[in-house]
Amino acid sequence: MLLGELQSKDVINVVDGTKMGRIANMEIDITTGKIAAIIVQSNTRLVNFFTGGNNIVIPWNQIVKIGGEVIIVNYSNFLK
Image (tube, rainbow, N blue to C red; front, side, top):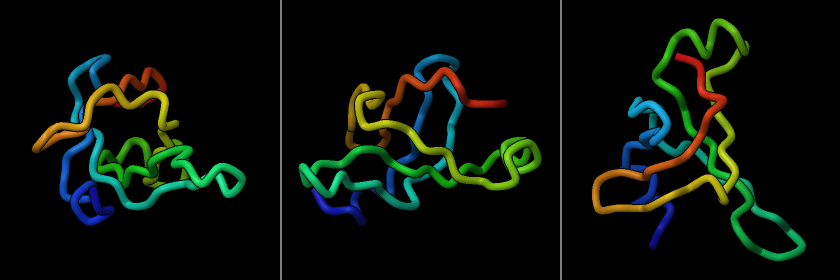
């Protein structure tokens, strides 16, 4: 799968069903070459207000499923 294909999918939090946004970038572990985390550009203004930014870093191990249209994550630190 290409990065562009991942970036076109909505990221959905399985904890509360919220749409978190879309992948803006990825964090790569340079020692292993594996993806360490995805960086989601949030469409929630409160995240921007409280954190000073609108990016959410989600560790790769919190991705539950990558589907045809969405990426399901288990992320309990997401602010509504």
